[in-house]
Length: 137
Image 1 (cartoon, helix red, strand yellow):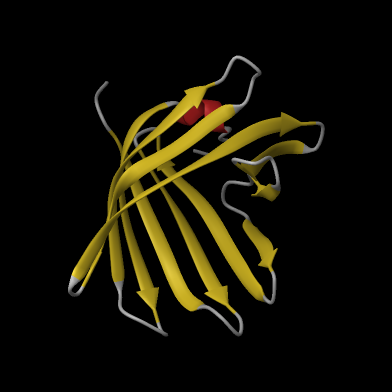
Image 2 (cartoon, rainbow, N blue to C red; image 1 turned 90 degrees about the horizontal axis):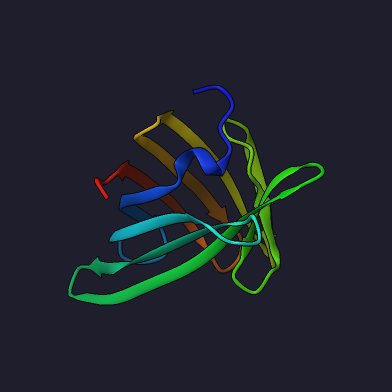
């Protein structure tokens, strides 16, 4: 898929995420993810699942939004702060305090996409890879 905006990905997804943490244990997240159209034109991106690691687990959830702007689509945090531009196939960078997130969204087909973040800095050193596959509604 060459040009993909987030409205092409509306629906329910299975999320399988690996967090290869070089400062701590490897973690794994399995979650349901929904991309849904909001009345204001934004796309709501919600994840709800379980994170596991050697000897533990916890519930995890987050909500992001993707909104259309004059300069293209932007991913924002739930509170409205900018996260990164939605630029499928192109690298993005998000500074987070002294740490830096370098990411990449890849859409493989209408039914499969991935997001990878390489995070580095004084407090963080990990690679987080998320694979999403479309689920039947």
